[in-house]
Image (tube, rainbow, N blue to C red; front, top):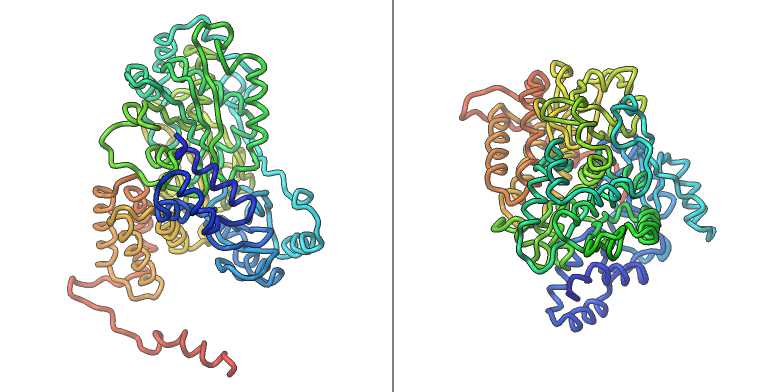
Length: 576
C-alpha cells in the first residue's frame, strides 16, 4: 500500500527542492525495499519530475499545433532571450529553467505556458519580457498568473442543456435514497451513457461488471488526465462544476459497492486542486461524502486526489492504474479488465470526467428528460473543446446530431475559411470540406471532445509532423510497433518536406499505420497513424503535389546541391 503513495512522495521532493536528488531516490528505495534503479525508472518516466537541479521558476511552454500557428516560435525565442537560458537544457541559472511540453489544456488561449504550474495565457514576446522582469525583481508569480477559465461559448436551449444548466449540490445523490442500484443502472442504460474519453464503452455495463465482482474492496477512479492535444472540456467541468463530477463518482460507488474514490488529476491542472478540494470539503460537511451518506445505511464513500506527473499515456485506464500504484505509467497487457483486477488487484471502475458528470445528470433529471435530445443512439449533449482558426474558441455544449457546418457557422464558432478540421485531436481523424455536412454522433462522426479548425493557409504537413512528433515523445516505449512506428512516420514526413518522397512512401505510411493499429499495446500506438492515413486520402490533391508518382523500383534523383545547402549556409554565416 505504501508503494501506491510513491507519486505523492516524489512530488514532495520535486516541490521542495526543484528536483528529485540521488539521495532522495536512495531514501525512497530503502523505505520501500525496492531497488534504486526501479525508483529511477519511475522518476524518469514522467515529464515533470527532474533528476537534476532546476531554477526557482520552471517554465513549461506548450508546443501543440495551435500554439505553433499562434506564435509559439516568437514566444519561445523571447523566453530564451529574457532569461538567458535554452529550452530543454539544465544550467547553473538559479532562477529559470525552460522546457517545452505538450498540450496543457489551454488551446483556446494560445500561446500558453505554465510557470511553476501557474497558467499564463495569450503570450507575446512583449508579455514574456514583462513576466521575466517581474520575476527577476522578486515579485510573486501569483500576481501575474492568468485566469484559465474557458469561455462557455454555446449551450442549446434550456430544455436541452444537460451540463451547463443550473446546478445544486447533492441533487443527484439525494435521488439515490429512492432508487436501488439496479434502478440506477436501468436509468443509465436507458440513456445509453457511454465513456466520453474516446472509447465510448457503455457505462452501465462497466458499473454492472464491477457490481458483480467479488473482490474484497472496490474503487472508483475519475480519469482527469485530459491529455489529448486540443482538449480542455474536462477542465471546464472541474473548474465550473466539480460537484457534478463528484456526484457521478458517488453514484458509481452506490451501484458497485465501492467505498473509495480517486480523482487522478493531470499535473497540468494542478491549479484546480483548491477548487476541487473545497467542493469535496463542502460535500463532507453536507453528508454527501463520508459514512452513511444521507442516512443510507452502509453507504460510505470517500474521495482523494492523486496528482499525475506528465504522461499522455496515463489517459489509458490500465496505465493510469499502474501510475497510481507507484509504477511507470505503462499500459498493462490486457489479461483482465480493471473491473475484474484493477487498482491494487481489486475491481476498479475508471470513468472520464464528462462521463461521470453525465451519469449524475441522468439520475438528477431522469431518463425521460433525454429521450428527445440527440439521436437514436446518441442521447443528450456532447461537450466540445474548439480551437484554431475561429473567432470564438472555447467550450461548446452541442446536441448530438449537430453538423460540422453548424459548428463552423457564424452563429457558433465563427470559423475563418475552414479547410482542414481535426476531430478528437491527433488520435482522431481529419475531415475536408466535402464532409462538413456530417453529424457529430455515434451513428456518423464520433468525437471524443475536441475539434481543431485550420484554414487553407495552414500547412497540412506541419500539422501532421506536430502530431506524429507528439506521439513519438509520449510513447512509453514498451512495444516496438509504437516506439519504432512513430519514428518511421516522422522520417517519411521529412522525405515529403525535402521533396524526395514518392507515391510508394505514401503506401508505406498506410501499411505501417495498419501494422501499428493491429499490434500496438494501447490506444496511443493503435491510433497514432490514423490522422496521417486519413489525410493522405482526404487531401489527395495536396499530397499529389508533394510526392512524385512512379513505379515500384523508381528512385528520386539525389540532389547534391540541395543536400548541402544547409551546411553551406551554416559555414558561411559562422564567424571563426
